[in-house]
Image (cartoon, rainbow, N blue to C red; front, side):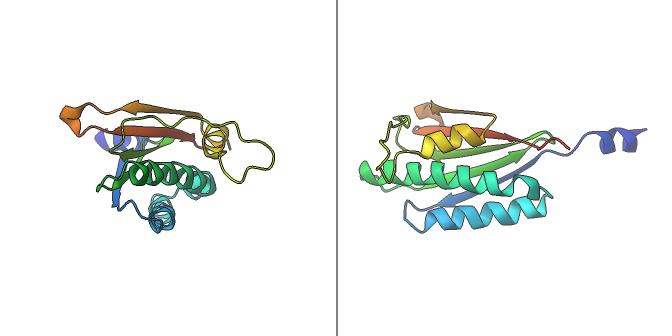
Length: 145
């Protein structure tokens, strides 16, 4: 009976990666996520996850550099059997603000991409007692078969 229950409920999987607030962190985060998702058998989420991660990690790095902080960013992946929660922490408590780029702008569309690819996303401050800064989170649902 216990083995039947274990088989019915997928094991929660969690992975985390600490990154420096450097330009090379974005491709490193994408490659890491690709490897983890492949290991977890979540190839169906790979393209969306890489795109969301690229946008959110880019924002976290830019915020950290703009604030001249000597801290990194942390990417966390969590799969509960139904959806993939992507979260990125950085030390700057100011939430990302959606931009309204014009047609000629080469940037400013990152949060629109996150919103379009995610079932849900948000940004929330992290209390100082827990390290401060902010957490940007997005959920990607498994595609319907």
